[in-house]
Length: 88
Image (cartoon, rainbow, N blue to C red; front, side, top):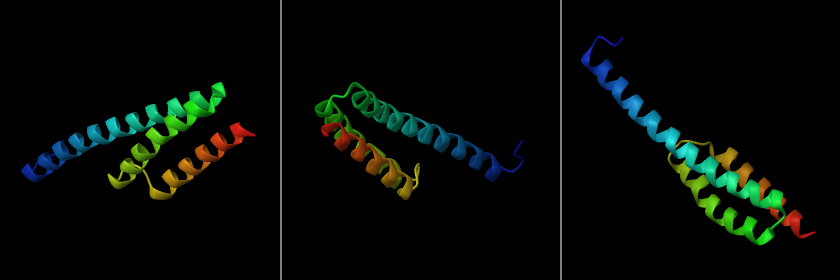
């Protein structure tokens, strides 16, 4: 347990930030799940629209420090490749 007032404040700040990051991570995962389901169904137009909604959310999470830039770029790239593979 924190003893000093600054340590107590830091604990409060960490708890608040953790809740925000958890919500943001959950939101991104929801968008990703929508893309995955559209890909699994084989519907390219639905996959494209879901992907266009998911991509800004992923990048927003990067700017907020929830995800690493390279991890987000890798996810976007792989999802886009899978959507393009539906066409063939």
